[in-house]
Image (cartoon, rainbow, N blue to C red):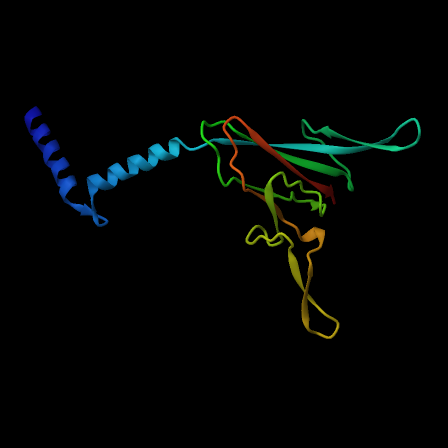
Length: 186
């Protein structure tokens, strides 16, 4: 019984090497997938962490307003008009540089993006006003003019749905990036 199993096993392996699957012998295809799996295991690993901070404005002894940011560490209820800073920390925990890193962050429901608040840190900054389908550094919306024609104007803050950073420089192993943007609670 053992002999038949070995012969059958060898016969099956020989058939795999000969029978083309998808234009290539099956064994070559399987080895190619093994290389692909090994390459993906050896890719850089970038861990992302999102931190929310609430803006606090207090007056000092001279009556000047002082702005500070306090991290929100648990579920809290925030009032309409509260400004939040959403901070994304990215850390390359791998042993290879992370190239062409793209970080996309949605504007949370119930908030409005604060135009001009996103930090760039060596990244190209783009925005979406259509739910993340398309991006532009200066999003525009179509409007109807008083005479009935259509035109373009800069997108209002309440239409921004996503912020996206595309890093031009590789993120070295064991180093990171930090970007942020602000929203106000509606």
